[in-house]
Amino acid sequence: MTHKVYVVTDLGVGDGGKGGVVHKVATMQRAHTVIKIGGAQGSHGVHTSRGETFAFSQWGCATFEGIPTHISAQMVVSPEGLLNEAQSLRYEHGIYTPFDLLTVDEEALCATPYDGIASRIKELALGENPRGTVGSGVGQAYRRFRASPLTAIKVRDLKRPELRELLAYNREQVQNELQYIIEYEFRLEDRATLADEVGLLYNDDFLDFVVSRFQEAARLVNIVSHDYLGEVILKKEGVAVVETSHGVLSDPLVGFHPHTSALRTMPSIRHGALEEAGFTRQIVNLGITRAYAIRHGAGPMPTDDSAMTDRLLPGSNKDTNRYQGRVRVGPLDLVLLRYALAACGGPTTFDGLAITWFDQIINNDSWDVCLAYAGADNLKYFSPEGEIKVGGDREHQAALAEVLSNITPEVSSVPIDASANQDALYGVCAGVFEEALGVPVRMVSFGPTETDKLCK
Image 1 (tube, rainbow, N blue to C red):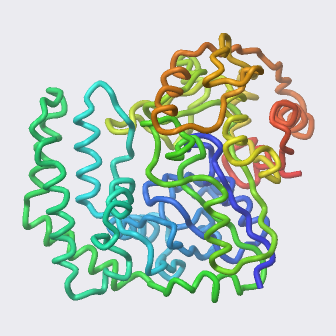
Image 2 (cartoon, rainbow, N blue to C red):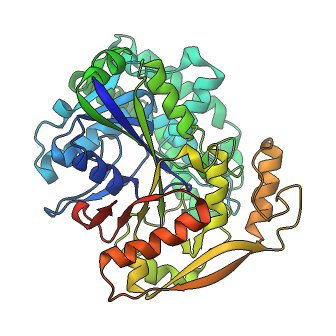
């Protein structure tokens, strides 16, 4: 019987370094399974001490250690993405039978290439006012499922003889949804991309291709019943790790509208999946954040400082693209982190923090941190102490996003002695976080691999 499950939660909007942390925890704890929750658009980077480097999306970040992955019903799956990721693992990394390391809940929702087309065209239509999207269609598929559950394509449907009809209907839904949007006046530089996307949307040969790819995924994927998590995975002896996508600040209820995900990202949602599967033993909640602020794409980021990009981003897996936008960095924002903790239920929700990319701070000899915002005196959005209030409808969260986009951070600098040993540097890092957030620091990353992560 599994006696402990680690739940890894990004306290930002994503990009916190979940890949390396999951890899370290699963390796250190000799986990029997990584359980995936969230969306297939994740890009969780792993660098091993053996020199392997990969950005995982649907396989768990302990795959290089031979640890199996279970994709839960709380995951939105991309069948096309599964085939592409398997090919990369097989031909670029020598994992010749990657599907032997994967089980997928039959109840998991599928995102189709047509959902991806819808997501990308909607983002193009926003022009100079981006919402931000990866463009894979995960959010699009989930929103449609919520609006019309009976029209959703689940993983179990991949083996149905009428799969082509299901995908054709999915395409028709997207065509109807985009009928008027594609008549907008798009930016000149986006019109060729729009034409390509619309061409695929109405191309019957592309539909045949999608059907063939989904049928191939059905042949290769080990599709299991919904009770497999409780009856098989959690009956195994030892430890499991829950790997999630997105981050708390992208949650559709507590994030800053409209720059949010369609999927819930709170640790309580992850606990619900475990409780449904009958798990009653220890859950260890681990919050993740970089040692500096980062945001990939549009949305409020009070400490955004473009002058810090070259100093903090070397080696990142995150690239600028049309749909997500540029990667922004800046001083560590402890106000936003306190808000994320409060939104999750407070500091006691978490058993510890994992701090990533602290090596970049050491390389810069000083650590810029934001403990407060100047002028945070609007009591509609801030407490008398200047903390961001939790709670509010979508209109409130949209207004809060505007406020945070124009707030001024108060930044101070913590000196860093790069010549100090790791224990001393760990103490400096832990001291800043623990004093500001009230959560113990359990891991600090001094480099990209599992051997560079110090745990206490």
